[in-house]
Image: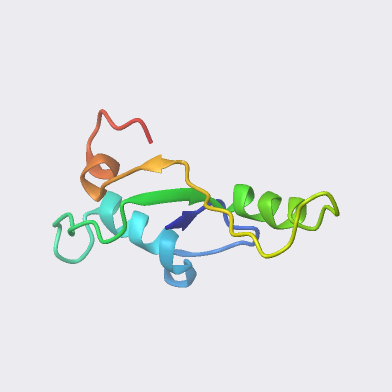
Length: 85
């Protein structure tokens, strides 16, 4: 999952998908249930952008893949009051 701040003004109705998921969890959503976590890793969108820019460096050899990750998460950790996130 890629998360990060929005660059434009938003309302609850116009949140992008990742931020809408967080909003639903924190606000209780329609069901008030924490859904199962489908993806176990997350990364900040700003780190993804930096990796894209750095990949343009001529010193970086072609035909490589770069795996980015900021750690493990679950929706239960997002919802809990003692969360590190």
